Length: 167
Image (cartoon, rainbow, N blue to C red; front, top):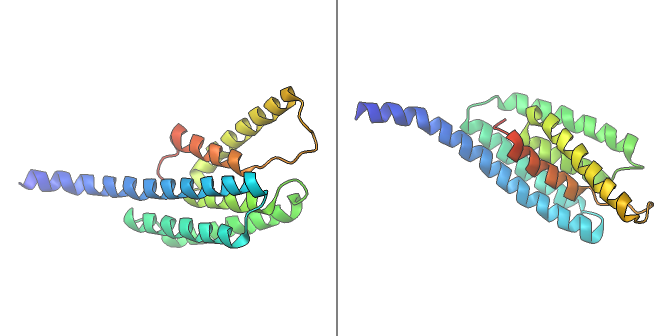
């Protein structure tokens, strides 16, 4: 009986870590799919929906860190700093990229953490390149603005599959 308790003491933190992370991943994926549909259909996403999704993913990130007993204060401080940088990027790149795209990137950051953002960025650039190459072959309208959120969603899935890991 003591051996079973020792084994369970080792396994419970592992299962709670995985459960917390994968719930965050799944909920974030559902939110991103919803945003993608809106982006494709209407070419815009209401700000209140973006903020609601951000709050949900942020709360899940905090809850996951409580479960794995990680640094919550650091998560909040770093996330706030990242959001500040994203706000600056919105001002600089507003001509080329929509504001909602940056908010979605921030939601993805909240879900996958800083360590996985490099893999996410690589995935995003690869998928964007493939999409634009495909459009060039099709000789579609070059002035047409394409929705980026579906590409971000695909890059998010690619990041999780290729080794998103837990925070």
